[in-house]
Length: 432
Image (cartoon, rainbow, N blue to C red):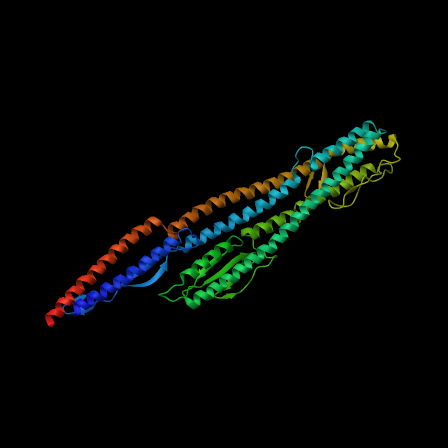
């Protein structure tokens, strides 16, 4: 009797185990398209054997837990690749917009306006009394000043938009930091050694991936299942979350250099920094104002430009009024020759056209480098994502094979129950 009852208990346990395994496999299949979901596996462990002299008899197996299949090393590398891809992707996107400000296409752009400005003075030097040539100089001067004004406005607008996006990005990041802390607290509350909070862990993993797109993230998991979340800024490691507590949020002025936040900060520095695009455009405009006004001021000539930088440069509409041909001709010739003069700009000496060309080239180089880095890190992210999915992702083929195996085990256990029940009936009939 004891042997038959033990057999029934083992078979019953096997039936229950396979039900859990089939449900786990079904849950895997249902989440096959969910990349934040980690494949789950029911862990089967043998029960302690009992000593029935002179032998030890096995007592079947039980499912001890349903665990997730994860590789934290691959996941950390994947999040690093996501961080770098988004940093350079955001930087490239912003710089492409800025590059358009200095691109010279056809009859537009600062270079075209500058060349037309030099050409108008050259024409005036040959016919200083010509009303048509004077009108051309006025128009070229005004057009150049307005084109520089427009470039400044567009750069300044880009900086404003970048600042606005930084603010939005900070809000998104801090919301995710709060969410990760809340998920940590929920995992700590609901998880036990035998019952891991797998769904909550999946939600936390997705939140960490989303955050890694914005800022660099590093995690260390404690024995109780919660993670300590840190990032990196100019001062080193910065702890964001410990357990269920938020230690720090990020601010718009943070020195974090990775993720889309870091890309935006780099773009803002490129535009508004001490040697950024606006500063170089201002240097160009200031030297243009000074050099042109100095040459046209010969023999008490009036100023051509007013203002001090790219924002304020304005062309006078009266600088040729009352000027005699004998005085204006040499001024116009000197101004036409200014295009070939080496000017001492901040940090370098160059002609106006060379300086402007170098600025355009620098923006193009910065954009190309960002695009190259984005392409590289995208390829790395795709590779690491495939590796992560090979470990944690759901394979329908594997799950189908497992389901067939579980079905056979279930059928075998059911037959054992049937045979054991028949044998018990026989024994009971013998007793009666």
